Image 1 (cartoon, helix red, strand yellow):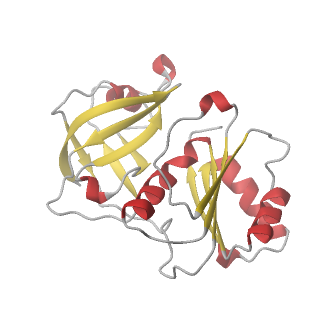
Image 2 (image 1 turned 180 degrees about the vertical axis):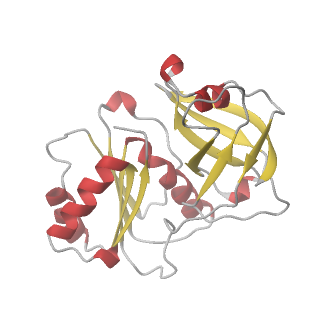
Length: 225
């Protein structure tokens, strides 16, 4: 792990916040959709310890590193409380970015992006990367929320990316995603969100006959919605 310093936090709405840090490595580059392990040393950590995995929610050209996560106040772990109470200049530690929830090299592939709640965070980086780099691809983003009140502003997407927000729990099932996959004539489907949701959708799509090689998943442990 390498040391870095906290810069600031921003309230996005409801219980969601973005935390900004200095890039801990000189000229570090990371791919949109990758994740890091963050360590915050703090007194008397609970059983979950002083480390967490987070998807990076911005792009390396910002010359900073951001994570976006929920904070539940007194119900939060000691780690989340330490994160929320960081002051500018406080020292933290990062692992190198990693993961394969990234854009395919072949730009001709049609992509269906699926986000459940907090699972929008990797797409925040991916959409921004596509926009600032003029990365032209055919893609569709389906963002499932419990309520439209949970919606917040995400980075502008290229005009080629269709966006759809839904709140219907009865609709948001493997059958619906398979229908969307076929209707959009997608080549790949990306699914990101709370771990139980991702497992249900992934397993369901496999049972419906969608090949494993076209499904890419990224799950967030510890969230139920």
